[in-house]
Length: 300
Image (cartoon, rainbow, N blue to C red):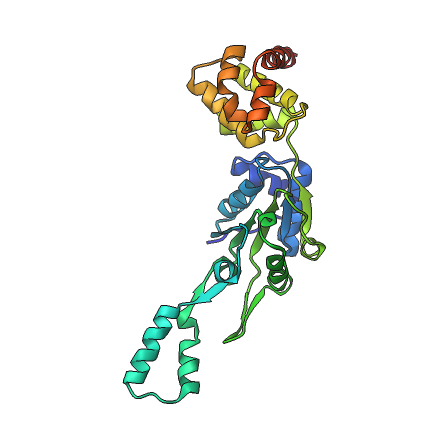
């Protein structure tokens, strides 16, 4: 059974915390308003800052089905909303012809029915008891797909020319994410509540590590956070996100490290940085400098 929606910002923040998601007040406020007013929540930010995780945590915390639409270039209606089961329709036509059915209008109404409709994530989200629809990385799709989304986000319905309109009895909880590889059209954003998910400050990132990488020693976690916070000030092609911080702390704990040292940092930089130019810039003396600064900051 779905759980009741939170009645305040504090309850929303506590709901996220139960799912091991450390949210700041502004994010909890945006989510609370989105849930209370049945409006989609549009989350934008760099990759790895925890946007997708919000949708997962909300579904788990509210006891609702999570329906995820992973976006990609070339995504169209047949993969996102619905398509017809053409093979089953052809079998139905052959059986009807064998039985002597000659009325084409009647035959058409038989094969274009919900029996032969294959519902994809958008159509499925309009059914059931208000599931959580996670439209992940919308910026990867083509602009025409955004236009198709407008009907869903505005009226909670999908028009299917052959049979009519699918409408939601109760609007789903919608979370949309974007890594901002391109701008999303204003028409989509206007139908949503918007929130920019930024990199966390050191205090919040340390709390995230305590929850997500509990095997890492406290001193190591402090130094990891201080190192990553300093690293994000460097001009890199791709700054490490929270996901990379968690992975790195877990890897260092698996190596039985309790503090940072330059050699280990150099050997494990590939967990934090994903581009060769970034690795070459940080490895060596720069890594040693950052380790020294991280130790000073962690001890403060």
